[in-house]
Length: 520
Image 1 (cartoon, rainbow, N blue to C red):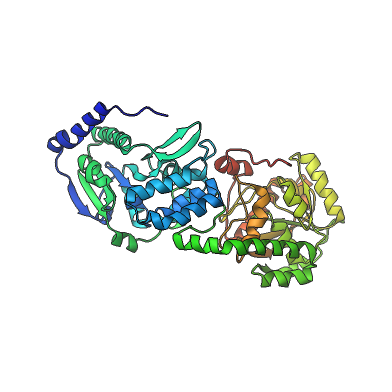
Image 2: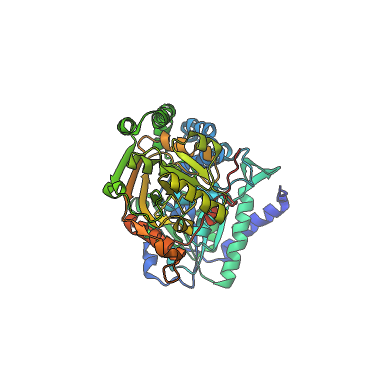
């Protein structure tokens, strides 16, 4: 833990900031709203903006601290924050933020905290104002400043996805590798800001500040360093449009966390009210899937809120001519661990089998269809898949991991070597409250979270069969070309973008590991 700033140094800093600067710096020019900057050339200017006051449309920080409490902490921690919020709303803004920080971060291990890079960016991006983003794009160097949000919450979002050059947030106090739930004193935060902006004035000479009337940053720091200051009002934010996904500087392909909704106060209330019913719904749906024949279980599951839409099912009813006398090989994109099960539902066939790269032992036991674990050895994995095909139909997900967003990861070409006829299957999933996937959490709970959702829905579309018989011919297509072709056909059907990213890329970004799940 860093040492406290000496009192004498603090007094010198205050004297320098409030007295000497008053005479040395010209009075800044104040403006209402940054929209006029859209007509200016800002490429040689440094833009300093307040994150929560000028970039985000929402005026409440509660959803972001709730995400930290739920995803990095626990359900109990998030419920405590929810219960305390009526009292927090009666406090001063600064004291309310301190309480939310304490509840959300106290006892969280610093090394294991990945919510700032894996969970929060999605929700922050969905709250960025398009108008403000257009202004920032025109600037030379961009500096994001926050006097309320900790550095670990905003740095990943601003640097990785909005390509902001410098991020200055509040640092968290750490003892023994764990967060204390207390932010460093604002004086230290102001010193960092002071040193940073003085360097910018020496290098660029022109600094423009964008903040709001509701933040304390503009009262002293912005007025001391900026030649022009633009204030964003709440009425301005209400008229802003949300930044479209197509204009993200860096595409949001991977994100983690269980919550599919932004936990505003009202959404959190509904979420906790649904909680007791969610456990009952998941248990009932699981029992129905395991113990009742498909002809009866499908309508019962639909009545319980589960939805399954099947397109081009006439293709699945056909028996493609295979020169090898094997079962059908269904190749689908990967959205949740239940993809093979829903393909089996669409086929109304319980004898179908599937293979997995990493699956928890609990999920293997609860699976109503046969699952076989692959060991990432091409020869033995290929032999296992060929053996399963001789026994009947097989479903594979060659991406090797799930992807929530409209992107497709690279297809492993192993499936092209085990069957000469491939049936591509395009799968989409929609949930209301919970994601049925995780990169850093317990994978055994993935199916349960999906079944806990009020209205989980699946869309399964069978595409025209693709021949892979030419893979082994000297003049035919390579296995990689066939795999890429199957990927592109599914991508076209779903209007998803095909990428070359792999399972390893996803887990390194979200969890900091290679994605291998232990058997225990």
